[in-house]
Length: 230
Ligand SMILES: [Mg+2]
Image (cartoon, rainbow, N blue to C red; front, side):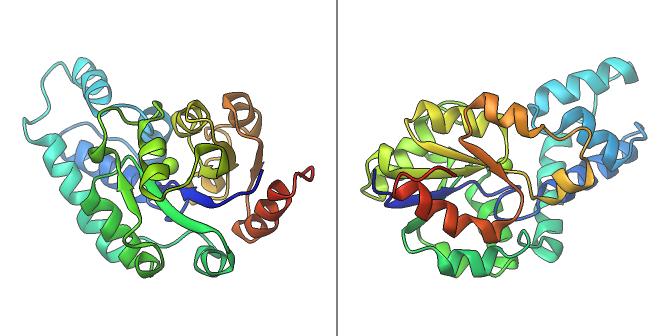
């Protein structure tokens, strides 16, 4: 099957934003009277819904977090991304080597995606083909965002390859009928080898293969396009 579109997740695939999100989450929880490190936030809360994480903290604290906690956290993450987020290693050169169409499909807000990609110097290469979960009814792990992105790019789902680092993302892309490659080269994987999802977990969720170095991607896409084994 020819491949015409490569769909990139943003956080943890294009940019190393997860480590920043965990760091800011830890700072704000600590300031709210719940001392915790970024590593502990990573282990306990990364990839979980805010409301669920907050409830767990509130149960242990025996009181409510401030009403504006989520708003403050979102803003703190955004401010920090704007000044310090980096692209994942070799992402810029990889994006220039891919011959197919490329786009972004992210659970983040448009503001967060734009801020991150701009700071990482890859916004120009990807805009305007940047799609956010805010444009569809149901986010990942539902297939809606991937199907929406493919439709906007005018490519059939079976001609798409999705690059994802998370289980919900992989499940959503598979549900959309797309081929998924599991990326394990983000800083959150490298710095937390014990608590990041294993390669086996990503494969079980539906990834065709996993990889850790973005420079491998163009050759992998070419092989899939000609039906060769990876
Ligand atoms: Mg991700």
